[in-house]
Length: 108
Image (cartoon, rainbow, N blue to C red):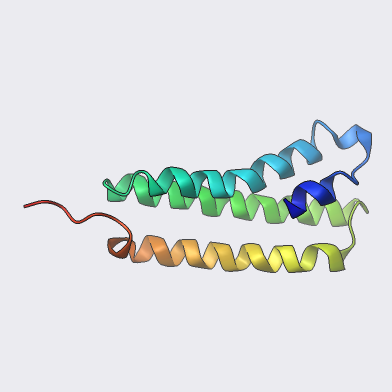
């Protein structure tokens, strides 16, 4: 939601490019986690969704960098968000590497 609020400051000409892209990527992080949660019965599908989510988090970081470079946001506005996405990516990687804790065991 914070990214949504910040992106309302972007110029009108960015509405269908940077604004749309950063909003889609940031929303996709949690959406992919939710999809993965519902696929815990299938470890490969679960891991795939976590991988997608980490990718979207990284993409969001790139769009934040673009927003700063274009002068739409200040570094001090984006730094905490960027760092939060670093933490999210680390947690997603940890979940991927230890998916047994999150997925359902195979029935014998």
